[in-house]
Length: 181
Image (cartoon, rainbow, N blue to C red; front, top):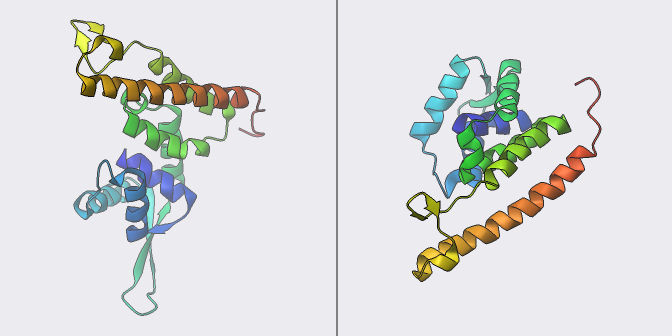
């Protein structure tokens, strides 16, 4: 997801490494903090793959600063990743939020809707954090108040997400396809 997030933020505008790190921390930092030892090697890999370039700007007081820019290949890689997210990107809430953060970069409402429908299908599958054999347990079946609480919170969150998905999909289904796409 780091690659997707880097490409997504750079799609918005060129950024210095420390600005990028701040944006990444705001999106995922409370869940998965990103260290310099993770971020900068990822940037170097994306640069080596031709997905971003580093431009040097003279520093006003200090040393020159490096600004990261998305290349056309980086833009294409971002859009492809958004069009065809992995199943884990759909099922894992944290990864899903990263996809959602940049889904607007797909300009075709039909492509956006296709991704949202995959999440809708995933949410429609019976699931639980706790099982009796292969059968998912409901909050009402669990006597442990903490486990029951987890399921009640998850149910409320899922209900809110389902309502949001249906609203957004209704709007996307009514949207005309963008010209030239």
